Amino acid sequence: MEKSAGNGVATSVPASWNFEPNETLLGLTALSVRGVLGRVKAGMVEADGGGRPVVPMGHGDPSAFPCFRTAPEAVDAVAGALQSGEYNSYSTCVGLEPARRSIAQFLSCDLPYTLSPDDVYLTSGCAQAIEIICSVLARPGANILVSRPGYLFYEARAVFNGMEARYFDLLPEKDWEVDIEGIQALADKNTVAMVIVNPGNPCGNVYSYEHLAKVAETARKLGIFVIADEVYAHLTFGERKFVPMGVFGSVAPVLTLGSISKKWVVPGWRLGWIVTNDPNGVFQMTKVVGSIKSYLDISADPPTFVQGAIPNLLENTKEEFFQKTIKILKESADICWEKLKDINAITCPSKPEGSMFVMVKLDVSCLSDIKDDMDFCCRLAKEELVVVLPGCAVGYKDWLRITFAIDPSSLEDGLDRLKSFCLRYKKLTK
Image (cartoon, rainbow, N blue to C red):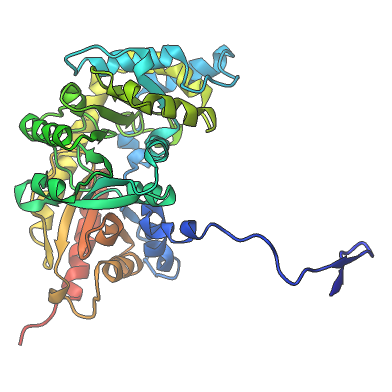
């Protein structure tokens, strides 16, 4: 069969093409918070909101709200790096040495040993750090242990790399502690690592020193290491203070993942890190460090000018900025906790003590014509212009993840609309 190419030249169209997409990718949107929220918000364009603003309680990016604006010292650091003209070139694959040295010093303040710049690898946010680790660990038959509920990006990256993700439970009746016995039952000779998110996303929990010690001892017994996702480090406002998993690096090796995204409220700046908390040198011996470096050789770097800003950003940001952020988060968490008590069909098992989220149980049996958590969230978005994340996006069907890291007045408005929605769909008792 021939067609004109538009320039008068006939071209031949083959009966079939020799290319096709990677089928694995086509199913991964369901494991993406961004993808699920896209489905939730799809009907909002058609909704008549009566001029009301959308209340975004579905994702962890409060940077749009003036009360969460980043520190002026952080802005000055980036502006200074740009204006210097010294950071317009490519970076080294592991990241600029001054930035890595500053991060090592910054993190060492909470550890019983001192990190070196060689323990730090810079990434384009924490998301790329997860991508790198899952690629480094991938081998035929390997599996990784991740929490339920949890951040499904780990499963998405594991599946894409041909690994199996196995889920251990977090226990809501115990402030979302790790089910240690469940981990031991899941692990086998092909298990390579477990993921611990602290402070917790999506649960808003903060682990005690004693519980993290049990996690480390369990990892040691199983011969695996811990991936410590600490992107919300020090964003705590309850009785428990943040304890880094790296404290237990001599018990079991730890890869710590972090970034400036949450603490400085700048997720768009895309600067994260992988840190080896490994005083015994296990990662060197097992060639994990070499694999990380090799991956970084073939991947994109975080923006060089942001790397150049890191020393001044870490050194000059005033403690008042962090205290202000934590004060707002505590106020918002308190509002959320109190208002959720009065909403039918929703139960909150524990008050959040860290991060920006809380998990609540949705009882669809109390609601008319609501099928599940996804249906609930889609209707809520369309009818009330309130966006929350369905639990299916974090592996917990018929639960909801609510983000309270928004302006407190907007949060109150959103929770009031959530209450009205639940009342409207409340089943009438006979």
